[in-house]
Image (cartoon, rainbow, N blue to C red; front, top):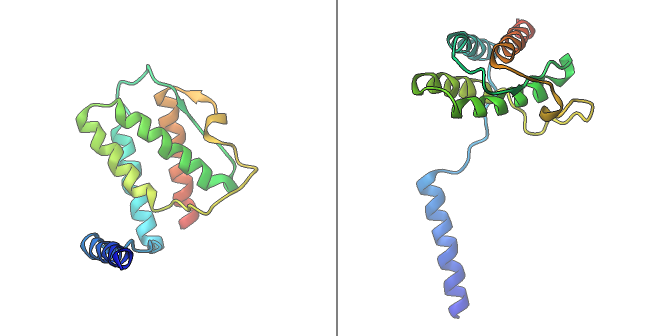
Length: 145
């Protein structure tokens, strides 16, 4: 009897927590116009980061083929997390904005064994990383059009 009370108590707690915090919602796919807007905003924010003084860090900088876009994007996002730790507060918000805009393009189920892991890419200083990421985002924009 005591076991049943404990089990029902746990179930009730889970139901209450789900109601309080909300059940996780399935992500909705972005429309082409929304994708375009997210990419444009990311490119603008990235442009504003162009002149940051960060020549002491190296970033894995992917330059993969078209079929590895998801892996390339994941690598850029991973390296943005590194950058976020080492920029001034006003630049940190730009990095956060870019991350939020690009996270919607990620597909957790994507897998292509022929694509390089992030760590297999060449390490480059921020100006080269910035340039490659800008080119990559522009190529993503062209695909949407």
